[in-house]
Length: 361
Image (cartoon, rainbow, N blue to C red; front, side, top):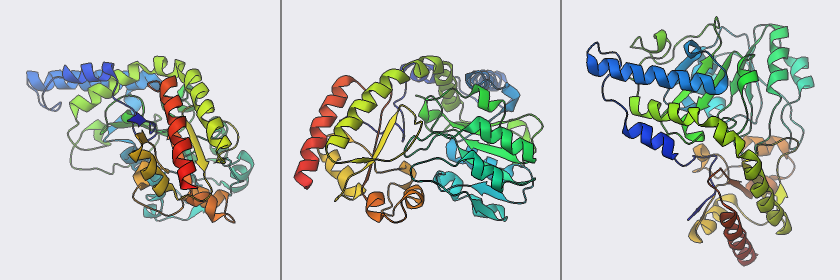
């Protein structure tokens, strides 16, 4: 199989695997030697994750993954009057928004584009929570996180950033210094699934959403998965190496995208994008059918978010971008690459795509 679904999960890196194999056993809350070793391993992972985004270790709250980190931020930050967001957000964010019990304002979107700073400035008020996906999990379109953070602060609003799809693909240090909360996930950077983090700026009020224990300084209860966090920390320490490969990843993505356009595909997403993904629409196809056909030929791809892979509805982002063109939203294909993707993978993928798309027509 050729794996082009890195936005769903990245392969576990050898560094993370080795670290996990050597992880100590024990409950980090226990006072005996096993517990102390486990606690030391968790705190080392906390320092590694913090360093990977330019945060302080005390600002890192470990979670079970990106979904919980996003939920914790949306549901726990401050006492908002409203939430300001957009249709580009991940289901982990969109599903949590109504639970806060305050009005949700959706910023308008130009076709293919991230929310604009002008629309934010026109809408945001003091006491709002602004929720921003830094890089789209579907299309890779990048938002201007720093400008949003500064605009939110000028208005007396909070900024929550879902950086899960950006982590390992974009440097985050500058943004982490400005945003109030930033969500991360281990399995997007070569670490294991089941581990994530919310970076919460010092002094920002946060109500825990998982209670019953005093872990994570009382901000998230529950015994941590020491082995997963050790793997997360090891992957985070390798982040500079991963980021340095993005120019090669972009070169391979562009080659793949050019071939798709030659086959009649429309590229979805305007402006800056992460190097790791191409998201296209293919006339005459339904996304789920195309993914199944490619899978039978040995190419692993997706039609959109892995969290929504069992759904056949058009994604909210595509509905917002192309409301008058439902066909464009129905026939989507997402091919996402990583440092492990080779030129041969791309060549073979192009051959498969040509064969399957021609057969479909």
